[in-house]
Length: 458
Image (cartoon, rainbow, N blue to C red):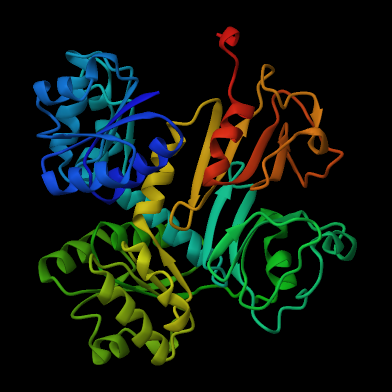
């Protein structure tokens, strides 16, 4: 597949790394020559320096025979014009644009993106993706990572194992004997910095970070088995009243259960805008780093603090200070993935990586076959792929134990009709089934090969 990626920032870089690593023909376009030089030195990509929306620049990038263009520059308007040029002049079949401004995303203006108006096939909103990720973290407060699959019927949980976890030093195959009715599978383990797909004979140890795919009805039971308590979040303090903080507060206000949220926003104009937009949420104008301001927001009695300003260091320090002041749980928005290892040392419970959430959204629209969802794990170390099995797939009609999956791949869940099942070696995969598959990044191309349709299917 030939792909043009416009914007060599964090998102563009990550998409380029991912796709070039899977032997796609990738060209990266950016007006910053240093970013392009860095990309071409490190990645197997071609680089073009120039403005992404200029027709001659896209021509140099190979737009005449490109299969897809991904517009992920820092400017919404450049991204939109790039898609327009890609459609009108080069007839590129698939156009994806990242848009931030809420006005462009309002549902009442959705007709704007029709092919006869502004031809964008897929619009990705980082702020909405991050807000959704934050809400999922709040829903599973004892996890460091979480994502939904099978239309909310299954949940991926990232769990840090403590020394008091009741199932330490137990081979994973014995968990099936101990908890036969539990619809949950450990699909990934990170140990001493290395992520791998475990074998049935592998044991779990303290300090392991594990990824568990569980039926949503069994989520609380799964957390309990791995030594985590579940507690309803009723009092939440949000640091940062921008698009992300505002979206989270609105979602909390729309819930039927009573959640009391407070926002601390440093910028007065932004704080006033947030206060006007919300009904029950109290908005305070002040510095979230100020302990007096935190105490005014009752941080000592809060169930969770969500630090979502546009500065990583502020988010980390606020999360630490809130925990020291008595807040039970802290979640920090962190753009720089190299800061992730600090979370444990700083006693921060969970973090959200906007790049990973945006990358996951874009990858969902790139993969072959009937891919319904993708979640990128860690620093793009692995993916959980939800995809439907078609009749032409090599998987159709075979038992799971008879499929030669790579070492870094595990089937974590299977949905037949509307029923989500825990897969075993004796489970037969049929056409129409939907699978949730954990795959290390190096094994994603083989998973795609197993999932994608043959040419004669069309």
